[in-house]
Amino acid sequence: MTTYRQPGVVVTDHHFPVPLDHARPDGEQIEVHARELVASGLGDRERERLPWLVYLEGGPGFGARRFVGTQAWIGRAVREFRVLLLDQRGTGRSTPANRQTLPLRGDAAAQADYLAHFRADAIVRDCELIRRRLTGGAPWTVLGQSFGGFCAVHYLSTAPEGLERVLITGGLPSLDAPADEVYAAAYPRVRRKNEAHFARYPRDAERVRAIAGHLLEHEVTLPGGGLLTVEAFQSLGILLGSGEGTHQLHHLLEGAFVPTPAGPALADAFLEQVQNHLSYAGHPLYAVLHEAIYAQGQGPTAWAAERVRADFPEFDAAAALASGAPVLLTGETVHPWHFTTDPALRPLRETAELLARRDDWTPLYDPERLAANRVPVAAAVYHDDMYVDTAHSLETAAAIRGLRTWVTDEFEHDGVRAGGPRVLDRLLALSRDEL
Image 1: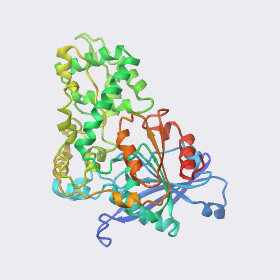
Image 2: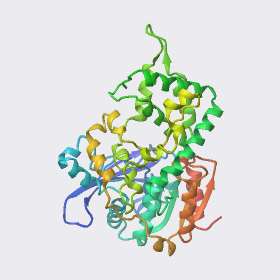
Image 3: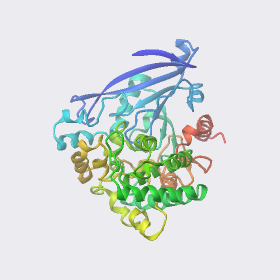
Image 4: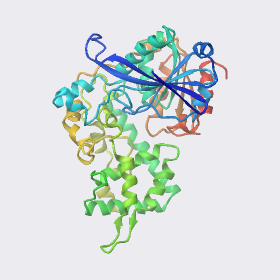
């Protein structure tokens, strides 16, 4: 363990060996990293008396956010908890899984078999091993953001004895919707976000059309070697689901072109920013496992987002340009072409294809156990959340006994970051029935 100080907190880095396959606890081990934060100024006895709160980040494929001191909700949390920020397996400082490390596993089939152990079920079993080592067996509070909330619902389904309470922000999944249904609900939400953006920033509609037209006529390479196809450009619409995303997108679009001797060209500064938004180099598991988080024994996901997109022709950029309609940006979807355009994903194309064909995914949620739930649960559900369908979330909320919801349009999907202490305060109060 390594301990150091940041403003207002004492930070300790932990490293835990866990089984790659929890069905074989004596088999291969990987490492999971977690960062403990406690308020500075506490003595050993005071610190040890605090209950634990473990934070599960959104994703899949993202390590826990690197807070500095008491940023965001941390200052509120350390007033009454020892906070554990978990780098879920394969992310952050946990044993990495990416284009550089996965070839150590062998061929694409071996890589796919390895990554099949990186879903919510394995993450929760990691949590249970870590909890017993840290708390001596006492239950803890889980705070799950987005995909972290999906993990929390799996936790309630399989190991509720480890939970003191559960707090979920923008992360109540459907208990039974297959990937096709998830994306069929998503595309209309994304269309509404486009319409709202163009209503706020009317000139951006023409800017998007101009960029899409340019990309259909020119091959554009990003600074890091990625290809900026029109479909890749459209995927910048993922920004529209966060609180500041519409404004970030506007600032990006308004500086897209510069004059050159050969005519207007996409600016280097624009391309650099686009690369930062689109590259999966820092979180490849997000792309590789994205549809697998919805797979529950209903057959292969088979590139559901790509197949369902065909049912929404308004997202066809070439057709929109030809008809004079707005070119719509897309949202949180992963497509086969990602594994061609992005250098961080190209070596994983065959692995991703095998995962898309996989048909032996096990169910993640237990409706009967959730209907009998006795763990206090509170969830923030964001009105018209672009990433997680609000109707699906409310159906799940009604299916989990005792769950209390806070439905709000004050925040977008990243409310736990934007709202910080207020969001955490509200969920803790709901979970304690204090409102």
